Length: 68
Picture (spheres, rainbow, N blue to C red):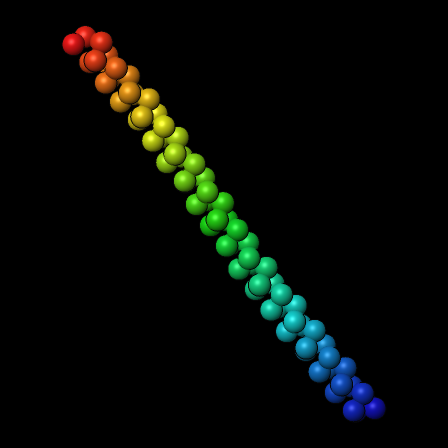
């Protein structure tokens, strides 16, 4: 039956379009997650660097205070 074949083809096309849209969404979601993880890692690295700088500066200042 031609109508049944057309309906089956339309259903298959709709399923393929849905699967393609789902794949695009999944890829976009993964990209956002990768970016978020990278930003968190960058922020953590910046915090560690700032902590090290504070330790060094505190040590230098305390040495100056002790010698004066």
